[in-house]
Image (cartoon, rainbow, N blue to C red):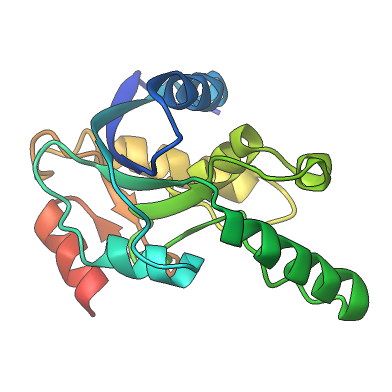
Amino acid sequence: MDFREFHEFRVCTFHEPGINSSDIEDLFKYWNDELSLYKLRARPVRVIEINRPGFTGFDIMQFLYNQRLDEGCDRLLYLKGRKVSDLFYEVFSLGVLFGIGIKVEMQGAVDSRTHTRGYIKAKYISTIQLIFTSPKSTLVHEGYHLLGCGHQLFMEACYKKIQTLKKLNEDPNKEEGFFPSVSSDGKEFIDRKQVQRGISN
């Protein structure tokens, strides 16, 4: 597939205490190795340390919904750290998973309305989590969602979504300096005002 010209998009990044600049650099380097296949690069900007806005992933997503996609930001990413309370929740969630087969703990998520906001667990507590996944692989996975990709068995549909975004990025009607996004149902966003309306609805 032709992925056209090289493009960079900017990711305004929130992180919890305990996640340092080296951790963030490693995560983005791994993600950008994957993105290079599509002539793309994610650049972390406005890196802000904050305390977790709530305990669950739902709380984190609500926090992200309430953040405006300001000029200079194409995507919002929250890097979740780890606390002692997370350890107890991990034990509980693993018990539920192995007991009744329901997964209650998420390693990350991205909004489906605009695919512009997401979070990942950037610090894992136990080796059992690392058996199943890792912060780097989680970022790559959620990174595809930030490019409009859904959950699919084959990647061709995802590649076409990425092609669509890159074509939109060359649209003369697009807001200057904004890397476009697309919703799960195919709605295209070429400026930040459209994204804000999409998040609010």
